[in-house]
Structure formats: C-alpha cells, structure tokens
Length: 42
Image 1 (tube, rainbow, N blue to C red):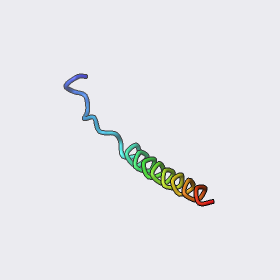
Image 2 (cartoon, rainbow, N blue to C red; image 1 turned 120 degrees about the vertical axis):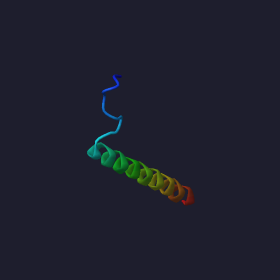
Image 3 (cartoon, one colour; image 1 turned 120 degrees about the horizontal axis):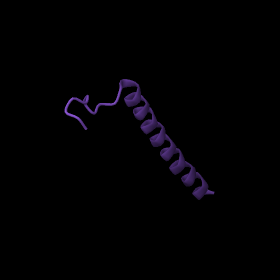
Image 4 (cartoon, rainbow, N blue to C red; image 1 turned 60 degrees about the vertical axis):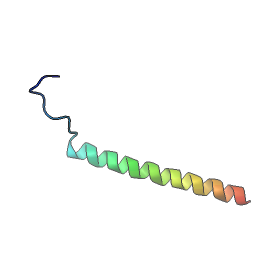
C-alpha cells in the first residue's frame, strides 16, 4: 500500500449492499429458527 492510496473506505453502494445482506442473513436465521420450532412442535 502506498501512502497516496485512498482511505480504505468502501463505496456507498457496497456499504448499502453489505447492510442489506446482513439484514437478509438475520432474517434467514430467524426464519430457520422459527421453522425448526414449528417442526419440533409437531
């Protein structure tokens, strides 16, 4: 890395995409837990 390189800051689109993927992953995890709970009740 050179001293003249820009800051290690991802672009705005990438940050938004990462936040969306994080939310999608959390939602998927909650859905899986709920699904396991429903299957366990039967």
